Amino acid sequence: MNYTFNITLICLIGFLFLFSQCKTPKSNDQTESIELPTVEPDVTNQEEHSIVGKKWTHSREDDQNGNNYYLDGEKKTFPPSRFRNSLFFNDDGTCAYMMLSPTDRHHMVDGTYTYKANVITINQENGDEYLSYEVVEIAKDTLILKQIK
Picture (cartoon, helix red, strand yellow):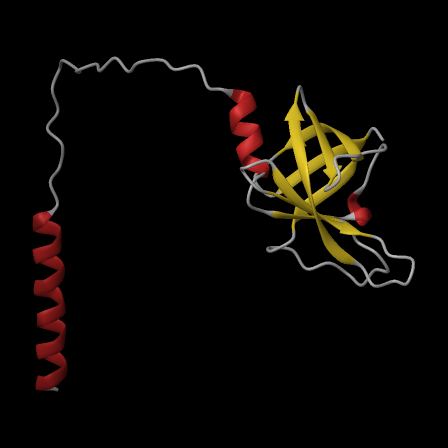
């Protein structure tokens, strides 16, 4: 009984100590205003960098109205599929994309990409255009594209 009382007393003293360390803000009749500088965000730059460094995997199950939904392939588990396209964009303009092989041995292929005026163009290593997408929406873990070519 004495042991339980000692532990309870120690916990109570600890809580009192913690609460006594918390400072309550003093109320003033005058509020101080701080003027923050306004900076216009570079939307194009933010959008481009939000696609970089992630493996975007096509989620055909979510496609709607001709839009292709690509989700962060590292965070999402997809159901089995015969072919599921994946895209990976680097910040230096290089990329990798899933190549559909006639023998069903799909593999990632290196290429390059450009991202201008809401259009991502993926080029093969030899410079030929492989695919073009209009960017419909970019979110943290979702990339919605509409295939142009």
